[in-house]
Length: 217
Ligand code: ADP
Ligand code: ADP
Image 1 (cartoon, protein in one colour):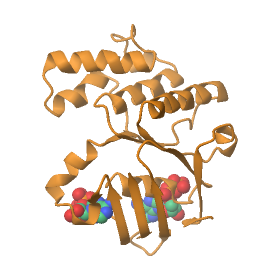
Image 2 (tube, helix red, strand yellow; image 1 turned 120 degrees about the horizontal axis):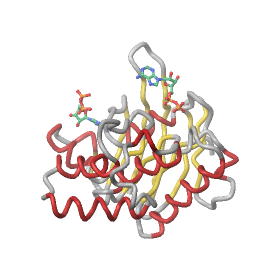
Image 3 (cartoon, helix red, strand yellow; image 1 turned 90 degrees about the vertical axis):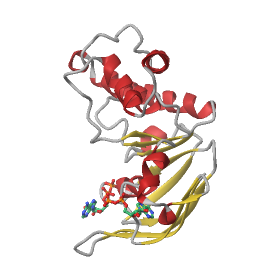
Image 4 (tube, rainbow, N blue to C red; image 1 turned 120 degrees about the vertical axis):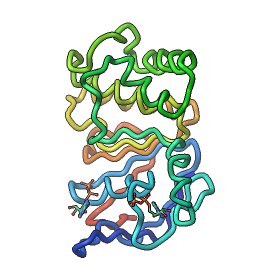
């Protein structure tokens, strides 16, 4: 469960990127956040992932009030999330396999278990068989699928994706959205930020519309 109550975010310099945002996303729900560039979509995801703190208001993730978390608890909170963010770059000097396995090793999985989960994650995004390939040799759509494999390999309860179809043509974009839908169908809570309203028209998921930092009814 993701719950925001009267959340505002003012950046240094005075710009209010989010104003009095209140909503709840239930466990197992899939929802979209839409709005033009600058509407506050990325800011919203960054607050939910505790990458940024709100200026005011309350954010509760799986029963944990983020404002009451000790800094030491934040890495544990983050394990609830799979993040597919535009600035989360792939490691271009590592293979497809290593890109997915490294985050698991860093959090202390043993090699055998990490390798097993890595193959399972690559299988889910259709990249099994490309393990030894370097990311640069993948198409744009495949690179995005690799990012998704890396985000789901630790089996997070919540997937947060910021413009996951940003640079892809519409066939690839639908493919990526279908993938999110299939994760949602096995119980993962999914929140996707996109400016592309056409793309999401076909999905019955709830849509939160942001306009200049405000949530439209
Ligand atoms: P979107 O993802 O919908 O394009 P953002 O959340 O990135 O919107 O941005 C919302 C507003 O906040 C924009 O006006 C943007 O310029 C501003 N903004 C975003 N990040 C920062 C930052 N780190 N410092 C100052 N202003 C920011
Ligand atoms: P820094 O920006 O210095 O790395 P953090 O982002 O780790 O700091 O958070 C600094 C403090 O803000 C922490 O005590 C944390 O509990 C709080 N904090 C971080 N994210 C949120 C959030 N989304 N909501 C409320 N408090 C938060």
